[in-house]
Length: 260
Ligand SMILES: [Zn+2]
Image 1: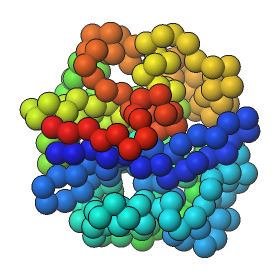
Image 2: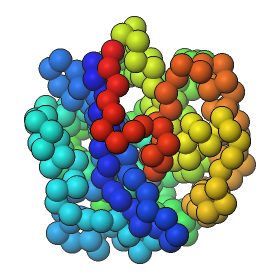
Image 3: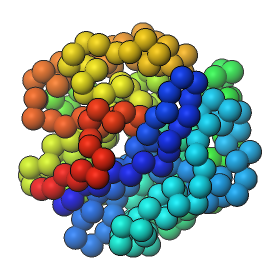
């Protein structure tokens, strides 16, 4: 098992330029993606991304799409059988359109939040057509499992050995993290937009502009704070765990890949 990371960004948000991380898990016979960046259709017509494009200001180019980056690395995009989404924001979920044959995995709570689009923030962040054309959408209710003190864990071992979906709510209602904790020795938790980075959590220091954006985009600030506390405890207990966050370069060096 080999884990690559791609940058589907950069996102040029006010005051910063951020990566937009997509994980690629290379299994012997297929690829599994965590999040999906933007699609070729978004490059052709950026208005598909709705109003949040004015905040995110993604650098939309065909060569930055995940599909193109896989091919450029010699990985066959046709073998991407599963895409696991941390949540349904446009910078995470829009790229699924480029993988029509893949199974798309999402927390059921996130799909309900997307479908309802109850608040102004939800109407700005979620696109009505987000799941059009998806043939196999697998919605996961919180599972009965526990993993390292986290509840509601769903086993995704059939997607990738050692993979679990863990509810990490706050940024969005159904936001989830993806754990890869297999026997092969690769110990990773992708925390999506639940926290800025492992360094930010373990040092207790998050830059003011990052804190501002986190608060601005939070569906539920109290839930986000509680999620962050649970992640801090997890990282203190499992220092060997590598955390990967969607928009930070603190955690993975450019070009670094992890192997087990
Ligand atoms: Zn994001």
